[in-house]
Length: 63
Image 1: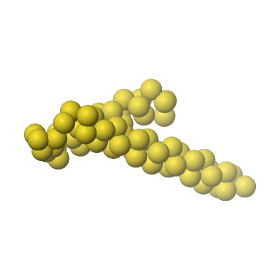
Image 2: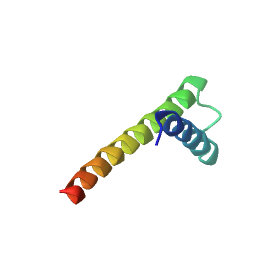
Image 3: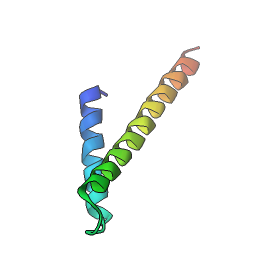
Image 4: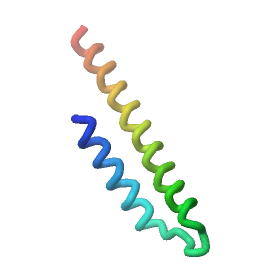
């Protein structure tokens, strides 16, 4: 998968996450942006780890 498509998928997922889980209106905008960024970083790390595991599994199957 191309890195651009992963980033686009992560951005879309973090935006959907923030629209599904309602943020309290009393929270400042900074905390709302921080929440979206936190979800983005967590998903990005998960995708990168999954890609590393996929490469390891392919190496084992080829051997």
